[in-house]
Every structure is written in structure tokens, then in C-alpha cells.
Length: 132
Image (spheres, rainbow, N blue to C red):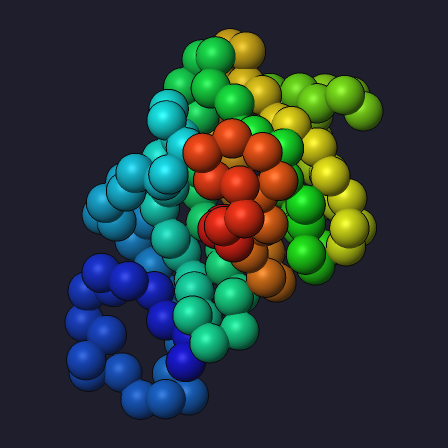
């Protein structure tokens, strides 16, 4: 079932009520990738659906991974760089199912990302894992 972790007042909402999320009040949580934290805005553990803010520290890198389904990212601050190019603040990139890349944030970044299914990591400590 889709939900927003740590959503204040969620227990009082009906199944068809809108969820208004005070993003500022949500906690940053660490990811398995050093230097990258996330705020989960929407998740459905049964399907893998995830919408989240990701905060990348300068110099952080996401090892080689494959997008199992379409991934979408809008950059709010900074930039994300890979072998195909750079997406800067105010820009948007989407990657098709099967796309593989190493993502880096040389100067840091704040991004809003949408996943239909978790990434599959191919190298590094997360190799073989399916994580957002």
C-alpha cells in the first residue's frame, strides 16, 4: 500500500483522502550510498514505487546500476553527471528501462526522483542488491 513514512496525522485519513505532505518536517534518512541521504515522499514497498528527495554531498557517487523500470529525476540544486551528460538545476532527465550508468555529484545536488521499481546495482558494495 502506498504511503508517506512519518506523515503527521496519517492515522486520521481515510483510504481515498489526499495526503498533504509537509516535506520540511520529514526526516532525512541515510541510503546505502555514502554521502547520499533521502526523504521519502511516497513509497509502495509491494510494487517498488518510490518518490523521494535525494541530497548528494559534493563528490558522492552512485556505483554502476541498472534502471529496472523508467527512472525520472528533476534537479533542484547542483548537478548530477554521468558518461552521457550532466543534468543541472532546473533540468530534468529520464532514463529508460535497462539504462546503466554511474552517477556522480561533483559539487553536490538536491534532486527529486521517481522510481517504478528499485535500481539493480552491478558493481561496488551494493552489487546484486535492488535499492532505490
